[in-house]
Length: 117
Image (cartoon, rainbow, N blue to C red):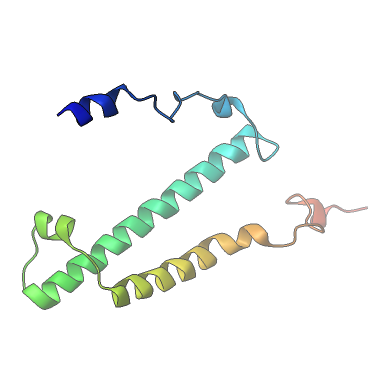
């Protein structure tokens, strides 16, 4: 008991949370584009979470013949499942987000290619 009391008296290495002003920062040159990027990334995360949960439900139905919320919440994937899901997640991220890495150096605003001289 004495050790526990002494441990609680020790100074902590962690510091208090310092809120930054990142809510007002603009990272992509336009706050509207920043908002759209936040939406796109959040939607991708939601889709992946639903897809992974569906994989768990499918596995439980195949192996147990039934599914409950607790079964889904308590599920621990095997190493093979983790590897397969990781590959599937990476493929999805590449399909969805690789367009953001394309070369846009010669891109023109929509409609400019149709302007007559």
